Length: 130
Ligand code: NI
Image (cartoon, rainbow, N blue to C red; front, side, top):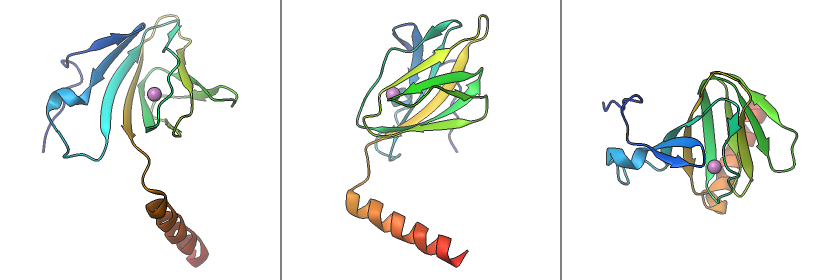
């Protein structure tokens, strides 16, 4: 087991957002994804982001208002999560006046389309069985 302390990592600043990338833990290729914690200060938002990686985000503290692509903004409460698709532009707002928004994100390049269709086929089979 490895322990990752969220209170002491090295961080960089992206706009007003404080980002702690997991590359600093030296995991190399042991995980099939990258990860980070990031903090959006009160009454601010992340810079607009858009990348080929899918991004799964879990709200650890505060409440996120996620503006993604052309969809209406979505409120994501503490403990809930949101998944951004490949190349889905996104901005994460913290509308609170006094509480940090803290998020854990894992992100990875899309799996090969052949593998994706295999997963989708097995998911359909499960659905039929149920
Ligand atoms: Ni992103």
